[in-house]
Image (tube, rainbow, N blue to C red; front, top):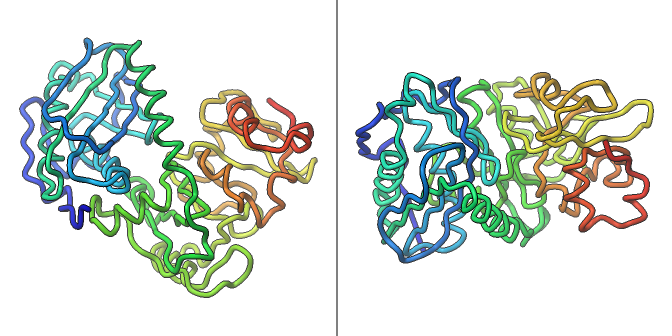
Length: 356
């Protein structure tokens, strides 16, 4: 079992292609966009393998030796932490939804070999990792195959092992504070972060110090079905009083804050007294006349009643929107959401849901 990681900011990593420094964390970049995915798995292979030529995709598959699967989950957050230290490069989103943006000025110096070497150096800098194998997948056919395999691994990891009632601690994530001052997401066993980070992943990352933006939050006593005194105290402190309390499974009353990388957004439809759910890939207007991007601009870093960002994994939670009526209250979903939920939602409930 891996007991302690070093903070990535303390790693002595050198880049031969682009400037590499903490000052670039939070840099907004415009330029060429590569679709990507990330996954870290336990394994004993070593070295670097680059598959294909750089075109439109960059899949990052890392094998780390000497670590558990739980520790491998936590290490995935280190990929974005590392890549975002490149000048002129921005790493966005998580898991199968990664985007890597390289500025026009940096593009002529950005190479897969350099990216792979910096990732390799970052992971080998961690004392508990015994071996590292970096696979960069640039071939589009191989990328799609590996991305689906990575998605299966992530789905298996998202299975809920404990409930909120069985633990004393939740976790706070402040990674979006690079862009959203005083923002914080609370991650519980029954509610992953809107970007898809599950409670076991946040727990491992905080305990092992894989990255610096996760912190333990003592949940405290229940102040209602989906509100906890310790969580409220932590949120009030981390937002500097901007937000005084949250209800973890609510949309209409004190919903959790939403960061920049939500996989989906729940919104209230007054005419139906029900909820709609739209995923990031849906570009049309929703029943309330707003697109996903327009909603995200309104709620990012804010507590806005009637809107809340969520992950796909949260849709499987037994406490999904428990504070607002759950699936019985959902009346509209985008096609991407329907394709996901139709595998586990009761048919009678699905019949009541309109698909956009």
